[in-house]
Length: 127
Image 1 (cartoon, rainbow, N blue to C red):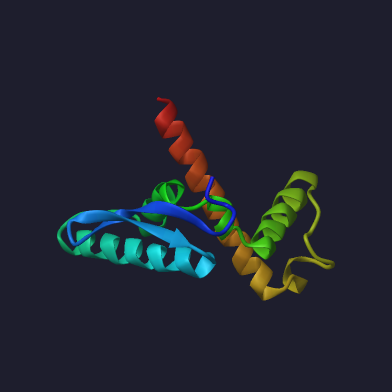
Image 2 (image 1 turned 135 degrees about the vertical axis):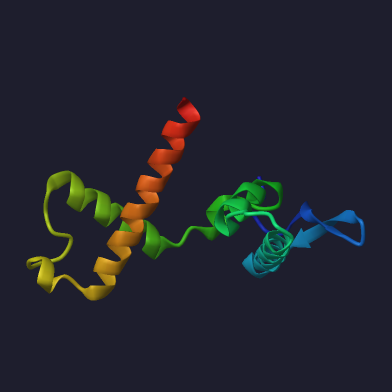
């Protein structure tokens, strides 16, 4: 649902006291709603809440778009490269640690921390 443009969806943000139904014709229309969601989270956090921006946005996506719209092909390749290298114990690029591209080293730490966080959340929900 919501993966072929154009489509109509009710946005998950109150505007003038109601949830509008909007027509989405491109990813730009989705980005506008995501920006509104981010602003809403920041506002709630200023009022004393402690919401995680990314988690809040991701949980709202199914209400107005297909989450696959946000998947970045390069990021998916990076995740696959990370998992493959880890699983088979090989470097993701030629050479030793010091010869790995700096950008890749940064990405790999981000991927690892995200995976570990998701594992921790899954274990906590399983209790």
